[in-house]
Image (cartoon, rainbow, N blue to C red; front, top):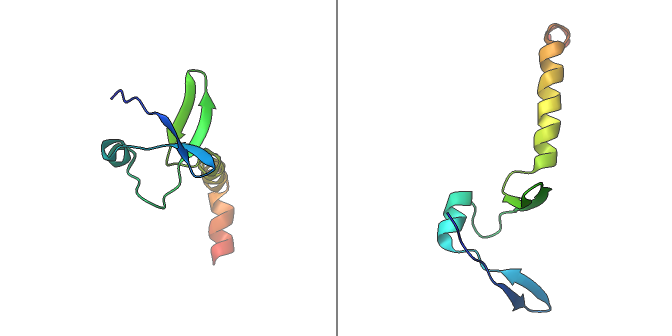
Length: 75
């Protein structure tokens, strides 16, 4: 999907209007948050918070490594 977006004036700010097809592909709607992260090939726009995903990955790794201890603590 290649879509050209124009930067427009929105109040005292600038913004882009996302077409409904792009919103559907991102699975977002009004009021949802999007995260812009820099990547080697430009800026990536995603509904997933990359910082939260990294923290969850670390938490899952710790839970796998220490599952016996966590099981005992849960009792």
